[in-house]
Length: 342
Image (cartoon, rainbow, N blue to C red; front, top):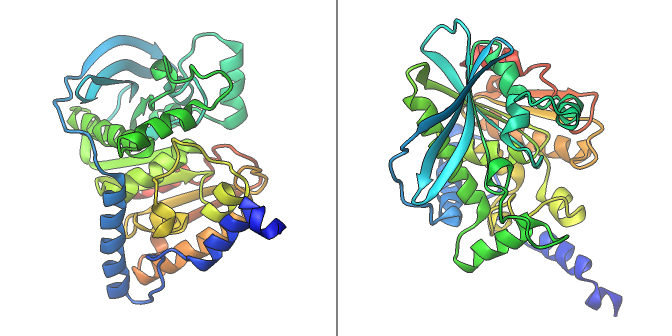
């Protein structure tokens, strides 16, 4: 009787009986190419409808100098009546046009400010940045990249009204709201990030043919989906996210309404979605002591990802930084990676 009543048993049995329909299982480059076209088309179908594109109407509302970098707070429009605030970081004496990297934050409520390391003199924020090595937007800017650090929906300056449900997770409640309309938060955030690439490409300081993306945790999720569907991303760094849906969603429940595309597991595992980045360069950072994304699942997913890059005949474009740490940005290989490809 317990097997009949136990929902966890039902879900795990369903997973075992229904493997993803488009999980990569080929060996040749032709098989990889055909698979990729099918899966990307299916992923885009699951993410639709994307908002209607409108003019960016971008404007700078604040400027400051910090850490040898020129900061501009910009606001640009991603759909009708939707504006995204972001920090644009331009290195002093940058050789233009320079490569541009969109730097995506995780679930930290400060959003873009931590990634850009905006110095408000607040001790709590400084500790957060130090603990997670979170200011990769600044770290990359110091190395000659123009970086854009935007707020996702529900974070940073876009928090208002997103967490008005007491102890309930705003990502979950608002995610369900979007489901009512046949939309989803992951797709909406991916759309905003695609428009962020539009803005980066529009800047005279940026070489539009050399764009990259990076993100930690939820930022890693966003980087994966952005690079999977937008081939303008020439190099992507997915930090502390590679895993399996079976592990982090079904077993641990370590996900939320902002972090997945409804229906995706019918067709693909996490590594398959990452495989849509091929043949473009991809760096995976995984902490050996990351409790939210256990290393065993990360290794399992990476092994599958290796088969995809091998079939695409670009094994050298898949990089791994498996580091002795937790849920943080390592950076041990990230700068060499972007230097090599951007």
